Length: 323
Image (cartoon, rainbow, N blue to C red):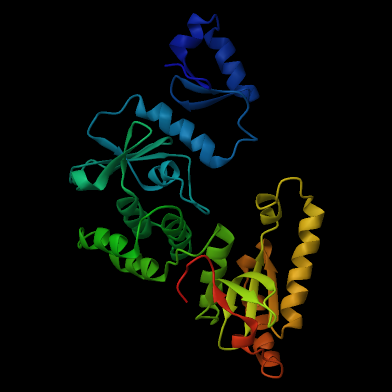
C-alpha cells in the first residue's frame, strides 16, 4: 500500500527504512500509526479530525472483505456531514449478519441487517446511504449530536426528512428508534453550521421555541438589512450565533476580517433601528444556554414596547426557504 501520505511497513522497508526508524518516527510524531503496519506520513497534530479519519478509513478499507460496508460516523465523514463531540478514533463498519459485533482500538464492526438499497459508493468505497447513515447515528448518538449531523445531512444533500423517517421504519425493532425519531423530527435543513444546530437544541431545551431560521429583512424603503440566524416572529426578537469563524468563511475576495466585523455591527445596528431586539451569543456559551435564554426572555419583554411592523420591514424567507 502506498498513497501520497499513507504507507505500509513493506513499502517503508523497500524505501530503506528500518523497523527501528519506523518506531522512532512514530514516537516523535513524524508518522502516525493508523493500524498495525500502516502509517500516515507527516505530523498529524495540525490536521483536523475529519481529514485524519478519512486516512484511517482508507487504510482500513484495504483489508476488509467485500461484504463489509463503511457506516455510522465513518460514513458521515465520507458523505461530508458535520459531527460534533463524536469519537473518531475507530473506523465503523457494518456487516450483514445478526451476531459477531466487535471492537478494537481502531475498528468497530457492527452486525446488523443491511439491504442493497441502503448501500452506495463514495470514492470507490461501499458506504451506507445518507438515510441509513443518519438512522444509524440517530439511534446511537445523543439528541444534540444527532441533530448536528442530521441538520448537516439535510442541508448538504438531497436527503429529506421523509427518507430519514423511512430508514427508521425499515428497521422497527432496532434499539434506539424512539430517540432517533425524536431527533429526526427536530431536524431543520436551514441550519448552516454546527453552532447553529447546537444553539437551536440548547434554546429549545431552555424553553425558547418556534424560531424561524435564515430570515432576510428589508427596511420600509426597500433597503436590505440582512439575514439572521434565528427569528422569533411572535416577539420580533432576532438571535445571532457569533461563531467567529464565519467572518473568515464568508469573506468576499480581498475583504479584511476587520471590515467584516464592522459590517456585521452595522447590520445589527440597522436591525435594532428598525425596531427589532437582537440577542447574540458565542461558542463557549453553548454549554450553558440558560443565561442566553434569559437574555432572550428579557428581549421579548422589551420588544412589546417597540415592535416593528413586519409588513413594512419586509420580513422574507431566504433563498426560497418556506416561511
